[in-house]
Amino acid sequence: MPSNHKHCLGLLSVGVPYFDVATASKHLASTRKALAPDYELVGPAGVITDLDALDAALDELQATRIQALLLQIGTFPDGEAPARLADRLDVPIVVHALPEPHLDREVALNSLCGANMTTFTLTALDQPHLFLFGDPEDATVRRELRAKLNASTSLSALRGSRIGLVGFRAPGFYPCAFDELLLRRTLGLAIDHIGLNELARELARGERRPAPRDRFPLIDGGHLPPEAVERMERYFAALTHVVRSTGHRLIAIKDWPEFFEAEVAGGFWPALGWLQEEDGIVLAPEGDVNAAVTMALQHNLTGDIPTLVDIGAWDDSDSTLLLWHYGGAESLARDRSEIRFDPFGREVEFTFKPGPATLARVGLYQGQLRLLTIAVEMQDRRLTLRRAAGLARTVHTPAGDVIQRLLAEGWEHHPCLIYGDLSTEFAAIARLTGLAHTAL
Image (tube, rainbow, N blue to C red):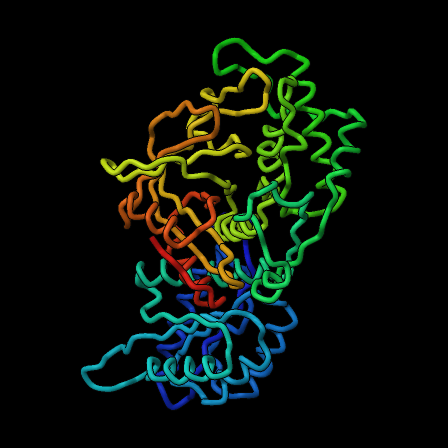
């Protein structure tokens, strides 16, 4: 996780004094050391063995507004501890059970049984939680722990966010439909509606914001004329003013047909990518609110820039999906020197960079939210399709079977691409939120 992407994490180890508290303390110290570079840790450095100490720790956790809690079952705990946590903390809890140090002669910790009691209580109280078992010194356990903590804190970071919806959805794009109150109830997200007239008014002012590039090579040779660059920079300035004036960091925008002007030099779409890259805005085109939600989760998990894509074709021979769309940040290109523009400066052509990636989608189906994830490996093969494009090799499910599932189950046509394998994180998010999860 990037160092500038720290979340506030509560860390508690609980137990009782008649088990092996010394071993539990060593595990806690090891865990703190492993997590300190990536999280702002809150909580006592020692194992909590009585309810008064637990209440004092909970006071501290509430005061610092933690985004998740790692509850390490140092030894079998007081049975009241899980209930008190659920009563006072409205954040996801990750329950971590520890292995026994020497089963050849005794059960020194009884941590697994304590975790079993804890997860029962949290489940009965409808407290969102995850769990794992293992030695925090083990590399595999650490990876799973980080993934589940990342999911928990990223989900909490989403709660309370506000989406700026500029306009509505693109006409006839029913897959971009959303349920405003369902999003608020399930994920804690609110939507602020911003009229397209705000953007039109800013555009009419004629201000320019310099493009973050000084060369505009064309797909068919040559370069964009100055008047096209000027109009692109006017779009960039207008979009920047609207977004900055509202203070939103998460945007869905109805970018066409109103701002798709045929035969006019200088297009709107390049500014969508520039705004994401230059100002760190998470942005979904075509007014796709649920895509914006998905991209916000992807950004929270990684700190990186996601992008919305269409799947235009597939190839059974190498199990690849063809991804393409507009509005992506140029930093997603495998080689910036390959970036090209169409003669009107509307379309930006580049190939997505190679590497492990995850396609994800928070979707709406029969009045409920659901989650789709597809593990892929972006291929290092240049494509020239007048948009941002790339070939995604599916990792677990043959590409043809992926297409069959998407069509048979009626998934939206806008999955969202983020680099990195986030399979464990999204599975954890699905469990914490109760979303039905299709993992391909």
